[in-house]
Length: 158
Ligand code: CTP
Ligand code: ZN
Image (cartoon, helix red, strand yellow):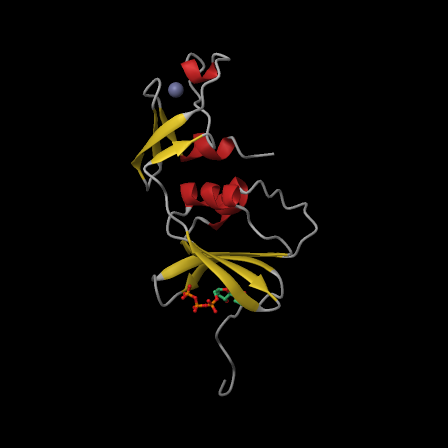
């Protein structure tokens, strides 16, 4: 088998976004939270359990022809708080963002407690405290209800 390249490589992309350093096992959560159904027209690559220098093994998502906005980045922080977002233009990394989960989350997630004041039709923005990053636990500022990752992901399924 001499001369056989045993390394698996995912090809470079021309334009789009590479979400790198996703904790192993979380790539599918990342695509879910971005609202990706699999029926889009873009070319996407999802790599799971890839060997990495920086972390032992990682997941990776490449989305061609889509540049993530601030809201997408905030959503990714909920499921992959150590990911790196690389914006690619003409094969080059033109922007690199380190994702970070803030200690409070406002607006992007809704409380699932039906009796919560934030669900009573009042003009109140939702607000959560990040009690734990992994596994994700968000505590509602208004009612104290604890949301876990499946409760959050469910809100982004289309
Ligand atoms: N990448 C890509 N297509 C390109 C350029 C980069 O798919 N045209 C991918 C690389 O494969 C890598 C990520 O984007 O997964 C970041 O690229 P780069 O900054 O060149 O890699 P590193 O220096 O290893 O990044 P870091 O320091 O963030 O680990
Ligand atoms: Zn609540």
